[in-house]
Length: 84
Image (cartoon, rainbow, N blue to C red; front, side, top):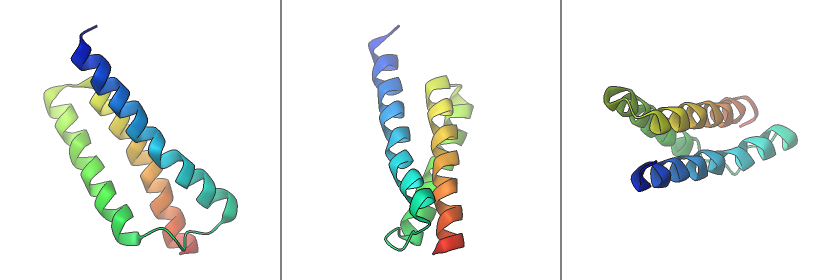
């Protein structure tokens, strides 16, 4: 495995996992008052664009990381809209 693939995969793992604590906390507390709707929306668009780019260049670590991040951030956005 190339060093660039290892670094890219590691970056994908860390950035994907970064959304998980907020999703879990929001789910458990049923509160998203400290989550910015604008931040969440902008992040979701950015992740979607990275996903599209990953598909265009057939970069599997990028695709997988952004699919998971899209799911996690979508969950945060859903909870924000539900419990806002």
